[in-house]
Amino acid sequence: MAKTLPIQKSRNEKKNHRMALGFALPAALFSLILIIYPLLTTIKLSFQDIKFIGSKTGSSTGFTTENYEKLFTNTEFWDALFRSFFYTFTSLAVAFLMGLGLALLLNRKFRFQKLTRTLILLAWPIPGVIVALLFTWMFDGNYGIINEILKSLHIIDSNVKWLSGEATAMATVVLSTIWKSYPFFTLTLLAGLKGISSDFYEAAAIDGANAWQRFTKITLPALRSVIVTSLLLNGLWTFRNYDLISNITGGGPNQATETLPLLLYNQAFKYYNMGYASAIGIVSLLVCSIFVILAMPSLKKQFY
Image (cartoon, rainbow, N blue to C red; front, side, top):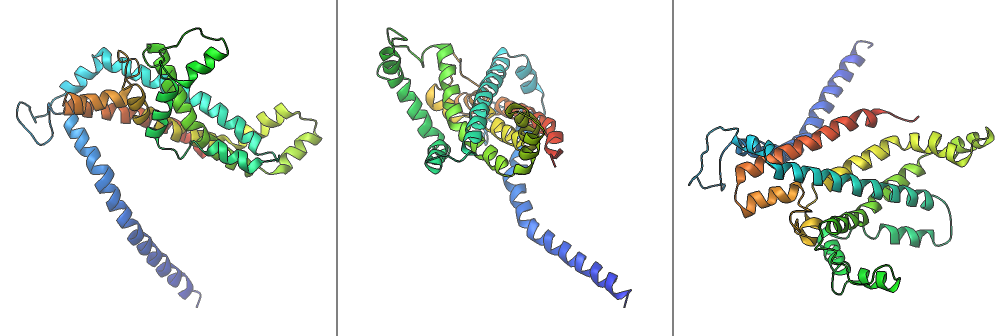
C-alpha cells in the first residue's frame, strides 16, 4: 500500500503536466504566430537592402550589415534616440511623482473619496488620439485655452506658438503624456498601499518614527516591486509611444519631437526604407530589453 501511493501520485503529476501543456499549447502557438514570426521577419529584413516588402525591384535581398552601419553613423538616429530618452524619463518622472502623491492621498479616508478617485482615473481609458486632439486644441497658438488662461493671469502678453517652437513643442507632448500616464501609477500604487498591513505603521509610531521615516522605511520598501513594475510597463509604453506625438506635432517642428517610433514610421512608410526601418526597430527592442533585464533583480526582491 505504501508503494502504491507514490506511484499513483506520480501518475497524477504526469497527467496534470500533460493537461497543463495541452492548455498552454494554444497560447504558445498564438505567441509563435503573432510575436516570434514577425520578430524573425523583422530581424531578417534588417539585414537586407530592401525598399518595399513584396517587391524586389531596385533592392537586394542578400545579407548585408549596411542598415546597421548607416544607423550608427547617422546623427538623425542618435538625435532621435536622445529625444526618446528625454521624452521618456521626463514624462515618467513627473507622472510617477504625481501618481505616488495621489495614491497616498486616496489611501486616506475623506469625504467624496470615491468621486475623487473616479475623476483622477478618468484620463487613463481615454484613447491616445483623443488626448492628442484635446492637447492640440488647448495649446493652439491662435485660439488655445492655455494662452487665454496665461494672458488672464498676466503671465504672457501675447499668444505663444506652443506647437511651432522646438522647446515648447516637446513640452506640450511631455505634458500630454504625463496627463495620460499618471492615472496608471495612481491605480497600481494605490493597490500596493492597500496591501501594506497597518501593524507596521503602528509599531513604527510606538517606536517614535515620524511620518517621513514611516514613508521611507515602510511604504517605499513595501512598494518596491510595484514601483519597479509600474515604471517598467509605463516606461516601455512611453518609449515606444507614437500616437500622441504623431497627432500633436507629427515629429516637428524641424524634427524637434521626432522620437525613435516616429523615425521608424517615416523610414518605413514615408521613404519606404523597410530594411533601415527594421534595423531601427531591432535597436529599439534591444534598448527596451536592457531596461527589462536591469529591472528583473528588483522585481524578485520582496518586502516581507
